[in-house]
Every structure is written in structure tokens, then in C-alpha cells.
Image (cartoon, rainbow, N blue to C red; front, side, top):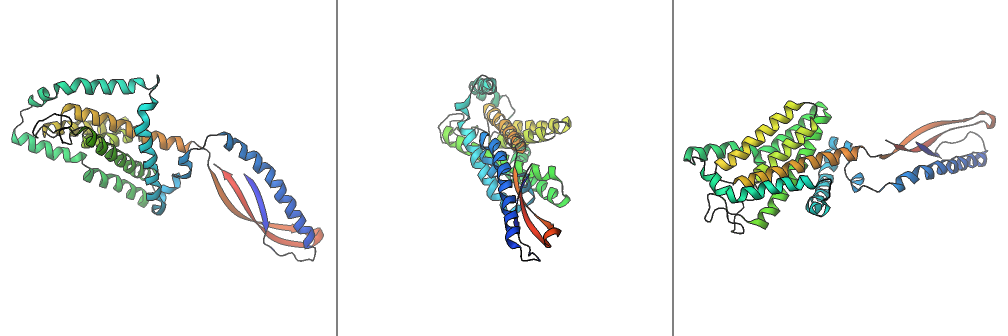
Length: 307
């Protein structure tokens, strides 16, 4: 921490000139370590999220929504430009899901017809799949934030904030891709056709619930039961979308894969930000005693505290 002090006290003698001279020397001395401490931060590339999302914001609702939207804007930029950043290290993360979806597309109709497709199956599939709907998941993550704020539980607040970010990221990605591919649903005319005016690809329910399942798995990486339970529920919801004749197998696999990566991305980005060195401006009051000059007062000290 470096300190720069400004005198706000009143000296008890007439020797103000000497006191001001000492204050000037203190400020000049403080500037030198300040310049030295600034050099490492100038060498480190600036992370734009350092200016947007601070951990303490999960405790204050007022700036939360504005900063959350700014984070989502950065998320969307990273998500939609990610294909241009494929490299040897992450190539398999693209090849395996893409190959799986590509292999399933020709089999979609056959797999859909393998179900009984009775009215009861379709009805129950629709009811179960409601678990992965946005009107179900958003209240759940909002409840996590409310619980965390009420009980002063940082994990609850974090899941609430990051869960909301993951859901909104997923909704935007799914909405854009649905408009791009416009695939007809299984219960529509020309079922399975791309660019037929439908909204089947990818599955919105799958991308949302898998993003939350991925987030929970990473949040509770030392409690495997949480991740297993979340993934099991996500798998059931995904299968129910096929049973309800709302999606093909390739739709839910594509949505599930994208949701999983979005959940991991939001969590890793947040944790990476927490590892950065941040700076806070801390005011303090310090007494000033100079018995030799019969001068007494206080100083208002401002410090840049790195954490």
C-alpha cells in the first residue's frame, strides 16, 4: 500500500509554513513508490472485466444489473468469435461435439420414430421438460441470490449471479442460432428440414439446463454428488424434449454441448477475474504530533490498497 496524505488539521502554532513543507515532502515521497507500484500493472494487459465485475457487486443490487449486462456483452463477443480461436489445445472440444451432432442429423428421423410417440408420452414429455424452461430456471437462480443475500452466503449469491449470466448467455445464443438454422420441429410440416421456418435447432431447454448443470458442477467440484445430480436432471430434461416431439436428438446434443461450455466459460471467467490484482482507494485519518514545534493536528490519508 502507498499513502499520500493531505493535512486537514489546524496547527496550534504560527509555524504553518514548516508544516506545509513537511506535508509537501511526504506527498513527494509517496509519489515515488506509487510510480513503482504502477509499473507492474502497466506491464500486465488490462482485463476489461476489471472495470466491470467486482466480487463485492454480488452484495449490492443497484450496480449489479448494469455490470451484469456489460459482462454478458463481453461474453457474447467471446462466444461468437470463439470459432476463430480454435487451436491445438482446444481442437478436440470442437471436433467431438461437432462430429456427434453431424452423425446424429441423418439419424434424427429414425431415432424419433423409435419412440412410442403416444399422446401420453408427448404430454408427459412436455411436463417433464418444463423443468428446463426459462420460467423455471430463472426463479431458481434468483432464489439462490436472495437466499445468499438473506443468509450472508457468498456461494449462494455467486451462483445466483453467475447462474443468471449463464442463462441469459444461453438464451441469446440459442435465439440467434435458431434464427440462423430455422429447422422444423418433429411435430411440424417438413419435420427436420433446415431453413424451413422452424425453431428446432438447437434446443433452448437443453442449452439452458446444461449451462446451469455445468456451472453447479464447477462450483461444487469437490462435491461430486452435486454435479452428478445436476447432469442427471439435465439428461432427463433433454430426453423429454425428444419424447415430447419438440426436438430431434441432434438438437438436444448440440444444445447440451453448448450449454455445458457456456457454464464452464462463465465460471472460469469469473474465477480468472478473482485471481487478478485489484486496487481500492482507502481513506484513513492519522494524528500528527510535532512537540518540538508545538504543532498538533490530523491528516486525511488516502491509500491505494492492492488485493
